[in-house]
Image (cartoon, rainbow over all chains, first blue to last red; front, side, top):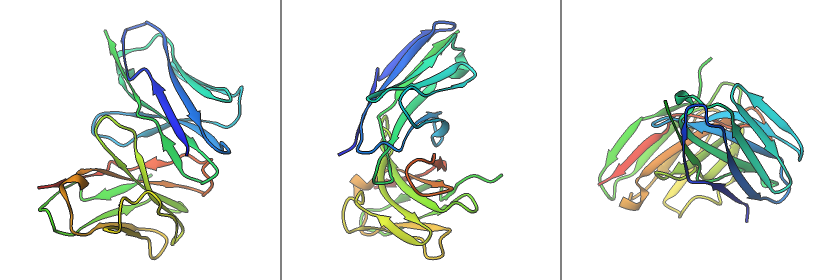
Length: 109
Length: 115
């Protein structure tokens, strides 16, 4: 069975304090690794797709990387508006996405 | 452009009643997914469709849950004889193509409360 585990569960950062979120996955036939941002009361908002080990994607202060077993979401010099829950999901050979429980990031000014 | 639309936004029902939750996907999107999300957790897969065909319903908790997408566009998730444990946020998502390598675009969900 596909499994996606995210750590830490929660992360409190000072504005400007860079950090990384971890996503470990066990998926048969990985077809894509996805990162989403979710704000309170909203649906998950798509950020990145990574397809193969070694791939990296960047968007503003966020950078996602992928290995054969893990993905990392690096937040560089975060701002309060980066506060959200970040979800990782893996798409496997069964064509559905399995999600982790998320990491809730709080950035204090 | 318009995103995924779900209705109602909130639904309160009494135990034993049937409910129908509606999803209107992004126009032209082939695949449509239903997920359920508990507070503090990631979305949990329920079922998905490619066009009008239900491809996988392995995540539906029991036979009180069913879903349809008769014309390959709008979908309805129906829960019969609701129970308190069915209370959750139900999320719909669509994708331009099938395959698990295409990102899902989520709606804002329907919050179901069974009293």
